[in-house]
Length: 581
Image 1: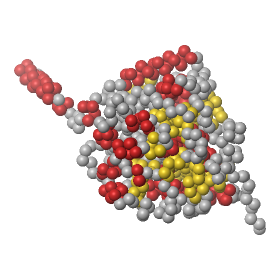
Image 2: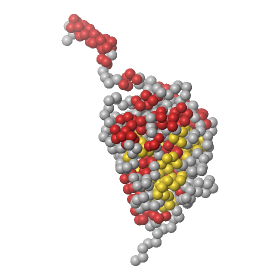
Image 3: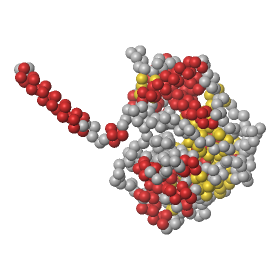
Image 4: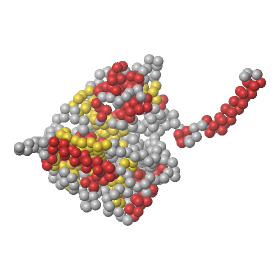
């Protein structure tokens, strides 16, 4: 019997979407942007000490190979010819840091991560001095807090009237970004120190590690990164688009270990193994930039918000580098071609979004699954004056207040778990509005609508609340894989590939779900101002002394301990004298 004829779909483009909890490979039709198939593999995070988060770079790499092979198998089952895959793009968790040996191809340490949300005054834990270093093996993930003391020492060397780090990078000196993690590795891991001295070490974010490995590794692998990932290292000058010698000297990082910086859309090299051997890797974007491209936010003032564990709100500021006066970050949005202009963005992060739903499930037990929160909120349709500020580890943008802690206020005898569930959803929306207000003040371009993506956008009550609280429409694409789509678009549009046009008239029309505000502007403002009052009440709960004290006992205060002891003696004496048994 004759073999079934392969379906002809035109040029296809693949995308690696490498995140903190999983790796995926997705394949799109370049003419329609339709998702044809994908495969996902969960990856482990390691927590060798409190505040330390690591991942194994080799596990990440093997998960990429597995996802590619499994997706190709699924395409074959769908009778789709994988030889039609003309390019591959890479989207990755940003800031996570890998240092490896270019001779052996082995990582010299685990990938080290960055804290949940960056800013001028990170409310983060301090790693105790004298902590031992775990054995070499994994990478530094973006959630990791071990570099706080490194940041404190470096900050003392920045003149108060000349913050050259922020003016060159758009970033505050923070544990979030890669430079301080590399500095920590150089200070604490002998294998890294020795490899640098012997000119064997290479540094990169996850995209660099993957591209180097996929294009041959020790056999001619390409050591590169793109401008969006480079702009998150704190070593990259976002004006000159080059590694900055003054910054490298400040952090004490040798420039010879840094990857070559390329645009987000050009051929970096060819796949050297597996079912897609010979296919060019031609797109590379940090995950949030990839989502901005996937949402087609190509005009000044367009913004997208990704709702996940936290929220990441990016606003395209065009070719203009806008520096925030309200606690936001300035970053490179994309550069879609070697000879194309660079575009910039303002970025604000909400630390606790989906995490608050998990907290209600895992800590309070008022829901059994994350999906249940929509049902609870729908039952009441209001928080009934209850406000939830989820400042579990302080307030991030735009407040940057480490002393804050989470509060639920406005409770009455009538309040029940449904009201608290509704207040939790509102909290995500209020925090997003605070970031958006800061962006509007910084760039002076009020948003006409907000484009959204991420897992939480499936919650229709959340999306409607967001439209009500912002008092502008919220627009959600029917195809939710915007991050992978952005990487695929960059890869397919690269010179020498040319299967995906990024011209406005050629971009596929994407079906959108639109949520319009359903309350009046006055009610929206009243709810927002009450939220701000609740935020003020969350501040000042933790002082440096109390948060760092290892002895929670009331007797650690000698005057208080003496007062309590003397009072107890007097009470016992009085009872004895009066004859009370």
